[in-house]
Length: 481
Image (cartoon, rainbow, N blue to C red):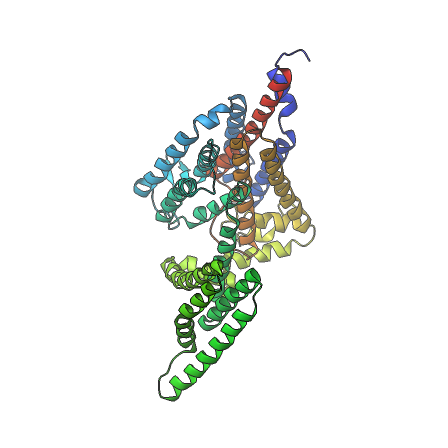
């Protein structure tokens, strides 16, 4: 050990070249698929008036940005976190006034021939801002005031996206739950979110009466598991069933045409004070959680109907089509139906590069953006799809690994945020193309056409690599003394 700090040597040894190689490979594969998706025999590969030509320009710009980021001191990420967040928030707000309406949303700023979507860059700004806030000394997600600060930083841009009618971008921000879990967010929040999602989808598949019965059963069995007391909830359910069925028979017998749902709900609410009193008499102090869960579930189901009715018609139809409640292969479900045909026709090994008929004859709408994965499935088949998804999986795992080896909380929080964003984009985009997720219009990283998304994903990834290198700089400086 000479004690000399050679930065070039550290960069050569500490850069996560495997992650860089995966990024370059995904970029190359993405461009090849974009070229195939909009292939035109009359145009050359370097026709910059075409989408694949424009994407080449964005790729070149991204390489320059990546080089600059790698040469800049990583301390600037910490210093500029809040200003970057603020700039992108202002740009998002400006779209409400300056943006033309494109596909029902006001989310783009027109700068000559180039359209910039600030919401894509806000993912980068959000990741930096949350990393800066949550890495402050003494911060704890378990402290209510700190949790409130995080929610303000997170939900303000989400609120702007709803005003823009850009629901797809807003949904992606659920990806930060992945990072919050690593940073110690209360586990019960994830249980509640799981229940909320279950109730939302259950409200489409199950009748009101069936859903109410499931809520009652869930709360009672939760009580039984928690307190190891099965007798009380079983007796309650038996009495509730007897009272509600008897009341329904009597009321309908005397001429009142009451739905069983209302009789059961009334019986449950009337008996609730008695059950609460009995629970507290036996000193079951945690029982109030299940009371809140029951009442909250009822309130959420009612609110879910209101929220669903407030969505645009095409958003409602896409949800209903995905859930199988309605089927319209020639209407609202046309995109997904053609997408599944394209992917399924690829078989095991695919039809061959530039040989995709569904792609070549433009049967799949938005095949260069939201449905770019159709080209992968049709031309490269199951094997090619697995390879692409495998590359994304390895990239996400390496981001997690980079986060764990960062010496400071800032780097760890940022890397986990980026990993969550990539995971959410891949799951939703691929899920859309195979009909597992409603079509909400979000890009597949490095594959979908679009300068804003491509540059944003590049910034997200390269800054993570730079922060990982920064942790290596710290380690090297300690070693070299």
